[in-house]
Length: 274
Ligand SMILES: NC(=O)c1ccc[n+]([C@@H]2O[C@H](COP(=O)([O-])OP(=O)(O)OC[C@H]3O[C@@H](n4cnc5c(N)ncnc54)[C@H](OP(=O)(O)O)[C@@H]3O)[C@@H](O)[C@H]2O)c1
Image (cartoon, rainbow, N blue to C red):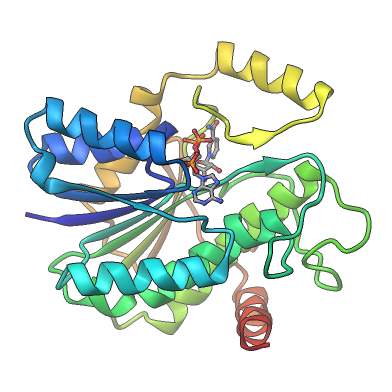
């Protein structure tokens, strides 16, 4: 039986992936902020008759301290983690700082993933065929790292912040796979395409109209999770891979530039050590 941890597993593709894994006979821990959504996941597990294999950790993952608590709880509960699925995001049209003083999009969509990947690495290494599935935006033609102002103290824009975090996740994958190339854990970046989910976020009126339209035309969640579940049960052989709507893309693309990846890794370690 695999043990799977899903960051942002209380809604959208994270939740659906969790239920699919429970149906296959595995154990799933979902992490999210919302108590009601967490209970709803546990009820769905009970309806499947597998409640003993489902668990929920309530946490606000935009906080570094909460990621550290989650890592400790998972380490105390399980001897190994077979798959870490990264799905948490929350769009913010207006800039917000967390109680720890970090810009919230950067903190949730990038820092949380950095902390969980590195913090759970030793548990992943204890599994037979471990994999990290970072569901974000590889292959996107837009987005760049704002090296001089990663947390947008000047000129915040919700879309620009989200797109930067997508690029940061590409570089996180590249740096992780480079640093741990000899390890067993495979790192897979997945862009599922447009999928009609909850689109967690706080939107200005114009963005909300766009989101409402996306929800109508995007593919259903059941279709969106197909490449996630496939990669979870049959991880690619290479230390780093990227999939766009199920199709492999080259990790020689500049999105995964090793120089930038090492630079961002160093900036992140410096930022976390403050
Ligand atoms: N949907 C798409 O079209 C699309 C396209 C490309 C890439 N993606 C990527 O796919 C992944 C999953 O997206 P989705 O659309 O399925 O997600 P979603 O329906 O918007 O759900 C987001 C998840 O993140 C959790 N979350 C939000 N803020 C959190 C916080 N501060 N702490 C902990 N958990 C938090 C939510 O749980 P709570 O509400 O319980 O906190 C929820 O489980 C994301 O990384 C997204 O960038 C999605």
